[in-house]
Amino acid sequence: MKSVAFHNLGCKVNGYEMDFMQQKLQEKGYSIVPFGGKADIYIVNTCTVTNIADRKSRQMLHRARKMNPDAVVVAVGCYVQTGSEKALMDAGIDLAIGNNKKKDLIPILEEYLAKKEEAENSASAYEDKTLGGKTIIDINHTDEYESMQITHTAEHTRAFIKIQDGCNQFCSYCIIPYARGRNRSRSMAEVLKEINSLVENGYREVVLTGIHLSSYGVEKGNDFTSGKLLQLIQEVQKIQGIDRIRLGSLEPRIISEEFVKGIAKCSRLCPHFHLSLQSGCDSVLKRMNRKYLTEEYYEKVCILRKYFDHPAITTDVIVGFPGETEEEFEATKEFLQKTGFYEMHIFKYSRRKGTPAAVMEDQIPEDIKTLRSNELLQLEKEMSGKYREAFLHKTVEVLFEEKKVVNGKNCQIGYTKEYIRAAFETDENLSGQVISGKLTQLADSDILLFTP
Image 1 (cartoon, one colour):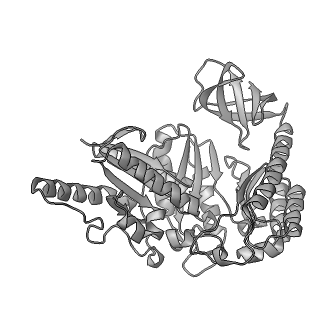
Image 2: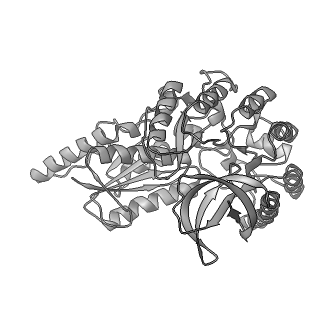
């Protein structure tokens, strides 16, 4: 059977979908090999969140072609969905498969392989990359949730579970609603069935994720509410064998007294919340078409801290959004200091063709973006260190995942419920075990030493 090499770009949802495609090919008898070597088939799961992501997607596809000119090169995912004409015209790509069609990878691929073999046997060229137009649908006019189910992932102890797809928010800088379509949710029964199968295969932690997770269970045309997501969390809590439940990125507006009071009663839910912010300045948030202001965001953080003891709150921040003045940047910096995050992902604004922000006036020069980014990265380092130090000499539970050499010593590495990275000096394999102990000292900038 033919060998297949995968390369994944982008988000955790993409990672989940790649795990699914790989699992299905393995079940069919295909041999999965590393991407860096020769393979019969290369599959690149692409990303389009920025122009840079588009470029990286093209680079990986062309790299695959160079590694084996005779291979079948398959581009799947978001880059294909938003740039289908370019993808279909690219001589380096044999097959282009858009979103909501990844579940059909095997029949599409095998139809192509059969026609290619037939053409080669008849000494004629085969260049029909669309296979009758079946590979790319109009993603913005489908209500179908693409059904997928996995039994194992690339992770050893933690499994990412895709429960939602699409986005109805249309932030002015974001192309994802055009790449992923409108909000669609997976049935609760399917989610619970998948988690039960993962538990049987030894997974101890699940991460519920989606393109816009807070919209899980929201009916077409309605704004999101927390009811369905809360209900799902409560049902996952009942599954025996799951030690931890984590949530992917949340929309701040889903945080309410009712929602947080409900999840606080779920003992297995990790007090680790990623609340996307993007800017700490109200005027910038309005230009971004975010649906909240900083005062509301801060209220949501306070609700989380009311019901959880020192929760880990992380966020995303974009610097250098079009028109961002020094005063607006300083307002953002002050708000970040006031809120006090555990970790922040800092991004320099990148123009994405096809979005309203790409044609806004007063685009910020790259050197100014870099200066602002560096300032916030330094602030992030300080806040992150302060948060970790607050856990020194406290009793915590660590779920161990892998071995690693830390300061020249063999260690097992794991995470607390707050996602603090911990290292325990031992030669024993503790992967998959939850052990209680204390964090004793900083091993380096982001690892604390652990003693049972």
